[in-house]
Image (tube, rainbow, N blue to C red; front, side, top):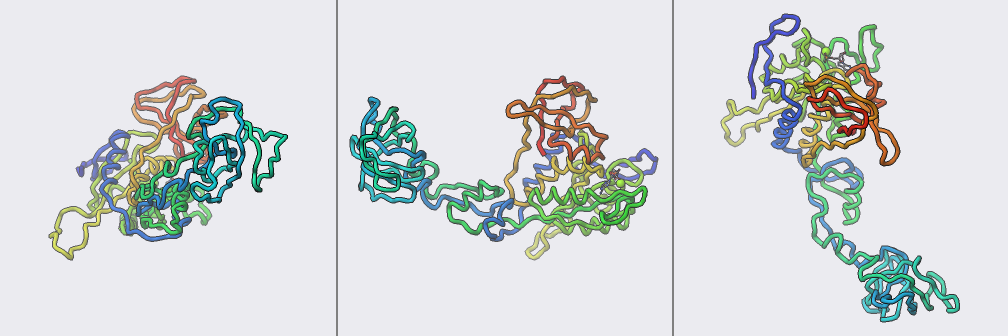
Length: 451
Ligand code: AMP
Ligand code: MG
């Protein structure tokens, strides 16, 4: 899609705004996903395991041996033969003890019929035993010399519960077989992934280079955060919230200078931003007389995939690319590669900026970081108080999820619209309202997008 439509904005100035049109939220998201599916991540690099936290694996991680490597007791108690407990209470002879880290040569000492071996969580199950009875279900009979834990434990044991074969231990290889894939390429390393890498002995991991994401804020009223703003000036919070979101999504943010609402300077900053792997712009995409972002991108021969989404906040969001067309390339060896660079024009209102980042820019950054595509995850909760709204747009409204344990309920944060970052900071999620609903009753289930 790359159409041009002559249009005039509300102020009557005639602009040639390249447009692919305003699409539904779902179409917009699918368009981003389709384009994201075709991008390639950067080269792999090897980093120390903990430096890999939040990075995307460029290698597969497989089990280096069986998991667990031996039949592992999961309870403190006694290794026994379940058949001996066909009738309970049963009396067994305690013939020794095995603790975590002990390795009993197979068969020595084994657990024979009528015998039990003291066993601790994490210890290997001795040969002959086929279950572990929990210590809570046993008593060492008082008139027998029981010995002490840690020493050689001997004596008579009474078991009060019957148990089945296989109880309270994990057989060797039950979690994973040697060579089995545990973490695939494209997986972002979190603490669970770090645990797996550590457990197979990987002190260094191969991850993809982080994509560099240019962040370009626009607006004559926007000033740097360490400047003293004039009475009508606004500090540039968007560059910082976006940089934080970029890092959180697995990218490296490159904050550019603030672009004024002036074509030449805006154009040169956009060109600078297009040197990165992705360009995020904020502001200047609405219908105001000085909203020049689409215009300048059009001058740079941008292709637009959409120029708006039927959502609130964030309707004016723009997604497209520059460069990399089939145009004049001969396809000869040695030709420069077709460097198609994607951009998002995010609305300048800070809450709109944050929401549209999460909905649309995040999946592109994740793809550039080498990550396997992730679906948006919606939770549900009961609404605390009624919502009335207008139909036509899918709404992502800042809200507070509260309540103890299973009794979660959600309520819209009181806000002054999509410029209200104070309200957003008080919120912990967005209530998602479908475009055809103008009223949702208290007590109804609503979808939530966590943030
Ligand atoms: P715009 O999308 O350019 O029409 O801007 C919409 C609103 O967002 C205006 O009130 C701007 O002042 C505000 N805004 C734009 N850019 C930023 C920024 N970088 N940081 C904070 N607020 C901004
Ligand atoms: Mg502006």
